[in-house]
Amino acid sequence: MIYLDNNATTILDEQAGKAMQECFYKIYGNPNSIHPMGLEAYRVMEESREKIAELLKADPREIYFTSSATESINWALRSATSFRGKRKRVITSAIEHKAVLNTLKDLQNSEGIEVIIVEPNKQGIIFAEKLLEHVNEDTYLVSLMAVNNVTGAIQPYEEVGQYLEAKNIFYHIDAVQTIGKISFNLESFCNFASFSAHKFHGPKGLGILY
Image (tube, rainbow, N blue to C red; front, side, top):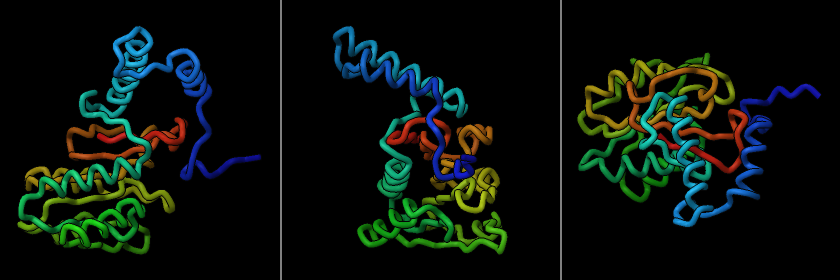
């Protein structure tokens, strides 16, 4: 069989599988425990955090493990909302993952935020200038998918981030389709980024939040 659906999910890398097996059967302690098994589990977890941070050109202290990209996205959007002050506007696109759109809809209902949804062009691209024309003094967050999981369209996520940095506006990118494929320096253009391990030959049930 020829498998052509890696945008949806990828096969678990053999080395990753072996490392997981070792953790399941040999290093299964609670990483918060102070006994030898717990300390070894903590060491392995922190080593993994450092490797991921190196890949993303980020500080290991800014890498959080979650159960999925959906949880990472929720954490990012809800955290930004809790620190928004009196600002109410969020800008996103019509082609975002449901994890983004549904979370924003929930925040709209529960927190009274304003959600501006920008439409793409016929090629599935969100032009930076079209998105940024909606930025005003009431804007506290922009959430944009870096690479679309269906079309493969690459959005101008760095251009958007560089503009927002000077505006003191939170910026979240859904980077699920980028990790392992596109190299970038997260610290240079965004506040939050969400990832999913199973999209780049890691295990299912593991997300990352920067």
